[in-house]
Length: 218
Image 1 (cartoon, rainbow, N blue to C red):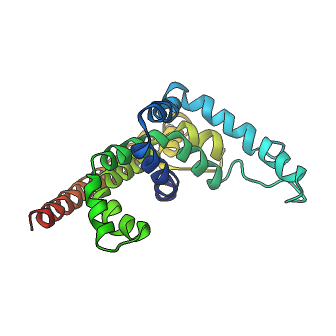
Image 2: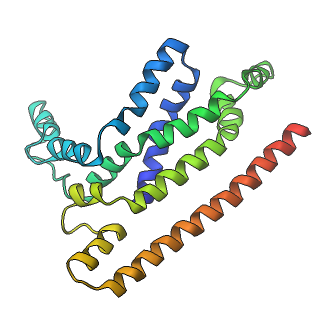
């Protein structure tokens, strides 16, 4: 779930972050408000909102049935797909703000230099902009991955009783099975995995940043 959430967050919100970083000042303020707006609504409210949308009689199924794309309601709620959708929405600001802050700091003259050397906009993006925005991508992915691993409310509400992640397993072992030893073991495993990911990502990020610095000095 965490890997899928991170992948789709990057895929969906990188273009939004790029547009936010390059938008004009007045529009940028509005987009910034829209980006941080999810912080003003609790995870419980947002999860219940997705339950209304993704249920068998929810808005999404009613829309698809109304336009004739499906013949019977889709089963989305209480599945992994619903959990990923909820987490991607929940963690939107963390990806967008990290990536946008780095893209905003990229000197536009670097892109103009690529254009002057014959590169088209697509090639310039993949050869210049995206590599330079890698530090923001790495930090955004780390935040989304770790927060999705430790999330409880969204997997519990959108995944249902049968869908289990490590955070819900810890809660169940403590409050239902009263197995404190097993809950502690799961907690330590979760903490260890997150620590390894953070250290590895930090190391790779430092190496990549050093490599970019070396290229600029060259």
